[in-house]
Length: 439
Image (cartoon, rainbow, N blue to C red; front, side, top):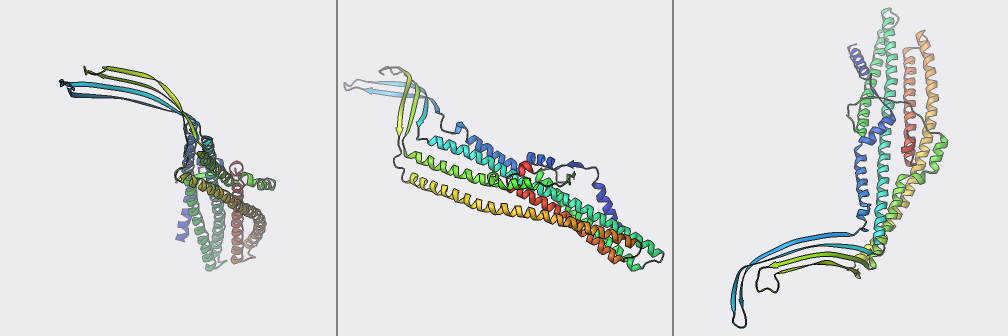
């Protein structure tokens, strides 16, 4: 009896903690996750790097400008002796040289090498954006999975709680009957055992629910102890929409898009290497200023200043690079071939996964329909047994069996409902629709 009181106290305590919670709809969870999730922040920063790399500032199309300046000073003692035996000595002769220049270099022609590199950097940026989308898709699927698991466990807790109330009502009935000599002590003890069994099951469901809530908070990157009320309504896409998504899946699947970008990037890399076989033509120009002074009385001049502009055109041709360019060209061709092979491999895996997820979803919808019918049958059977139990026609064992059958049917239907939703979400991810059509 003391054990039953302890369990009842815990049930009341857990119920009290569940009141007055802030509502967290699935759309709210998505918004919080997109703002806070650390994996998304990391991949978005990588995209910013790719965007910088794809800028015109990193393309090689702009000229380079360099400036140099400096000053040199010297102080010397000079001894002079001529062929005519005339000699002299000059102490502390000082000289100074100052200079500055600005040079401009510009590649006029490099056989479209810059063009291919620039296009490659743009495609790398596009690929990076697709990778961001892929991380978001994976994160959303993870979020939805845990969110609906929380909802499933809430439903499970309520189902088990209802069963606990039925068992408690039966126990109270048996106690009253025992007081009036209408039943045996064994019947009371059996009822107590059933209350304990159902209550322990209820406490375990609360523990599992708490763990799932922390998993959800971790994905959203919020305080792990945050608690909300959740939207438990589950809806499914129409079969027409699912069929439409199935037929367009190969065009919308994000992973296949990434493999297509890899082929384009590998091709640009190959073209860029091929462009190095031809010469490069460049332009250069500079402005120079130089001033030299000294106090040597025998010098040809004491001050010399010159400044002016200069410019030119140059051609450079890397005729043979020691075999490095040939090796790079061969490797680029192999990489392009590998990119194509990887795409073909990905297409095969995609087709298998698409069909598997589609069939799983359709099968889970059928299972849900069957479980709905089974629940209806179990509920009707329980109600009939309840009526007969109340008038003493059926035994406690038969009533308990009907109660357990109803409990199992409710739990099975609950599992089937969320399994169908989860399989739908997995299908939506494979078909490239999870961001636009999942909530």
